[in-house]
Length: 479
Image 1: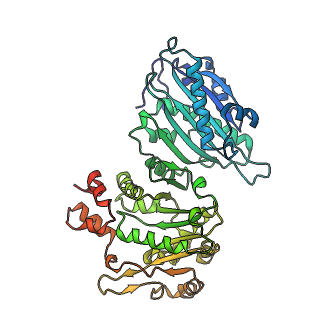
Image 2: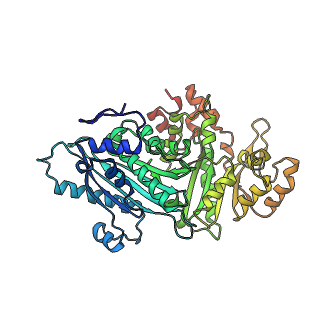
């Protein structure tokens, strides 16, 4: 159960937006400011309408004019206003004002908060539906430091008024969740869509921070965003904090790798290194403007669980190892490669490439993955390769015969033979030739079984530093 702040009356388990606003208003300890830029004062409006807001609302403001906004919160180096940096400035500024203007001696039990959003709604041409940053900085004990929840949204509705209403509901859900659902971040996350259809708005990034969230792994929160259809793809960095894909990938060269990484092996890191070297040799690629992404699909995460659900511990085990290698990790709903390419193409027109093994390439040429699109595999391949996308192919060793398979010796289905030859002969498939033959016998599933059964020798199959981390954190069932 979520904590109950002093002075509260218990309400129903699924309160309406008005009930949530009223519950906050009737709590004599919660007190804060609302600062909303770009879509009206839709969140604070809910608290005004609910009644009893005088004890909750310290201030409500909307600095629409850029000059006034800059005068209050400062000028951004990039001259942009709908950014995470801008949002955090707003949250800090308003909290500082509360602390400065309200005496703690006279109000020792007040729980301060600042709620803020900075958004751009749909444009007149309706080509850009809009997006925004939403956040809250809040206390759960007047003697404790502040906690913080920051998220990024993308609007899906085509009417600015509807977008404003949706934003107001989202903001109310966030404030309510911060105070009443903070002990269960998963429940808090799901509650953000209370009275909101998932077709109205997309949440593609969220980060929890502060004393009350010390035990929360933001990577797991990212997983929930994809699992519960709040977004199709999320990304987090080596430090474990969630990243906004649009910020990371915008106008960048992208080199992506898909796999299970259960666990990451020497074969995986060899593919990473050798593909990167080939990618950097491309004339259209600037190493300084390149992002490398390790991608895991939701279907892959589900396939390792007996009931078809996601093993959260297994997910965190994999991501901790990848992050320890300094990699950006992406979790997606894209089972088919062409959908991933479409998604990435929404952020960049620069050169892209994939590094992969033979098994992954065979899947690309498997017709069963394209039965749900009218144009079948030809339509999918048009989307996959229209940007001159390259594939760097790592060879496969037959563990019984010792035979090596590469792009020259790979046998595809007879119906796919000519299509395969077309892309091969047009330079879309490049073999990684300087691979390390001695590691081709390493298989992730074998290593995983050896770790769980405490067999000797698995350490030599993994990159430097990974065995130590597995043992220290007891990952993959290690004992």
